[in-house]
Length: 108
Image (cartoon, rainbow, N blue to C red; front, top):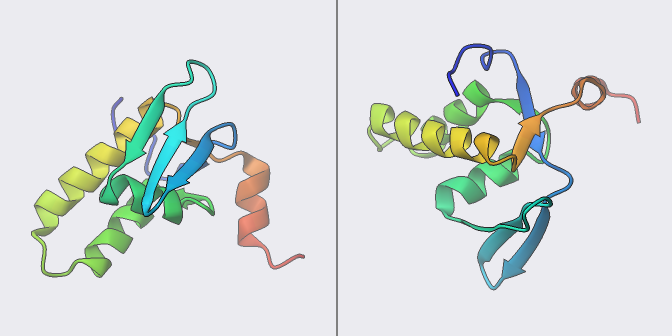
């Protein structure tokens, strides 16, 4: 999956994915094949950020701000690859337009 078209696209958690916490670890179960995925620190952070729809670039900026002492190129590569893997596996999906609008307004 290339990065074209991902610049303005907002992503969110796939609501069909089940989440299981075991102590401090998170595991996701995708709905179709029931595959289980362990979330490492990077994937877990992405999952937390995507509680509300966000663009891929916003996630990368958050990581860069949270880890200013890390090599920005290496960090962007690792976070970007993890994000892309989560999208490819269907764990995160393109945010439906209604979610995007709801998150951008202050209506209750």
